[in-house]
Amino acid sequence: MSIDAALIDHLKSRLDRQAVLDLLARAVGTPSVTGEEAAFAGLLAGELEALGARDVVQTEFAPGRPNVRGLIPGAGNGPRLLLTGHTDTVHVRGWAERWAGTERENPFGAAIVDGEMWGRGTGDLKAGICTTLMAARLLAQAGLTPPAELMFAFIGDEESGEPGSGVSGGMARLVADIEAGAAPRPDFAVYVEPTRLNVYTAQMGFLICDITVTGRSAYFGVPELGVDALKASHAILSALFAHSARLEARAPHDLVGHPFLLVTTLEGGGYIAVPGECRISLILKLLPGEGLDQAVVELEAAVRAVALDPAIRLDFAYPAGRDHRYGGTPSEVSPDLAAVRLLAEAVKAVRPDRGAIEGAPYWSEAPFLINRLGIPALYCAPGDIRNCHTLEERIEVEEYLDGIVAFAAFLARFGGPK
Image (cartoon, rainbow, N blue to C red; front, side, top):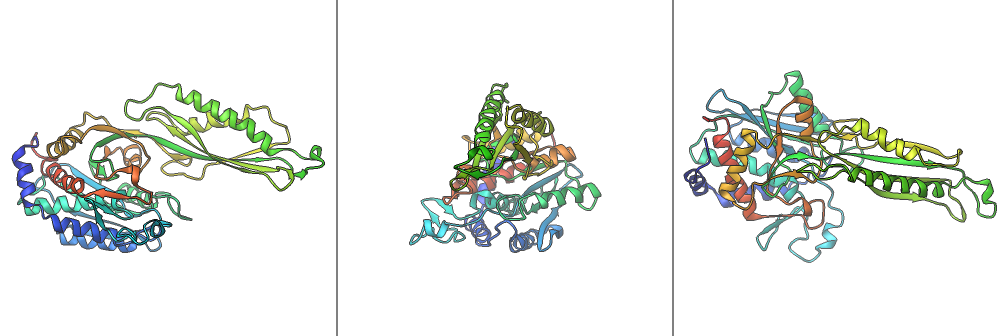
């Protein structure tokens, strides 16, 4: 069943603008920096209960750090749709100083300035979470019952940057619960990372590698007694840049582009001495269809091929394991899936300039669902990833409102008659 203008007009006429803005303001006003998601999870549990969801539960994936999920029954026995996103945000260090003396000063204040709501989590991704909740409420207010059962699952620990966190603990617990039968198994999923209301059906994979180059320090006056780790690092950097060029020469993915390697950190040296140790950090981008194990083999081979002093020791560490021990796997689903086309149609019916099929310029947790569980998943939500994680995080109010109507139209048709 297609998205018609009458449905969009009906939904728009029932949208309570102030109520949906109030929910987003309350969400932003409930801090949930990674590791401290509990208060926001509690707020979301209350919202699900207010929507009439059944089986609303909070399940800890780590002490004091809960996921929250619930179900809204559909009209039939059709597919189950998962609406999911992470509850945690990045830190707010420097925010108050950047905006001191302005209405934006409080990073959790949800100030609206020139048609945009400002604050940590507005785009990444509390607007997306609120969009799903308010879309379900809008359906009820419009007198409509979704054909499919709606499964809401809001999870912690997606963002990285806080000590001991950011390893997708929340998603790993949700997947484990689904595998064990402790949570229902969805048939399709929408993960509400910000996409500016475009539809992302593919995403890159990644790995982060820390290379420790160990030589031997010595006083500068007798350098022959040392083994220069910085000199070795220079040769290794050249090899890494050459490896990136080889990656970039590979055929690009239609939606994700080229793979590459980016050196992000070089640390080393000592005071008036031969540098005895250096550390090189890098991030490597993979395309759908490429594997992390092979990427690591190629990377380490490129580095070890460099002619170094035999006394140099190389150690490789991969600190950002997600759905794979080395990092995050790439993933994709067919843009031709009926659910993909339906969501794109719903967005275009509200915002003709959005709803394009694109690839994610980031890594998030859909691969857990796609690659581990075999559940098709995509990203779609209001918000612009380019201002997320910055001191200028914000979301256009009208984009958020349009997202609610578009999602409500999608929910009204998903799982219904063909």
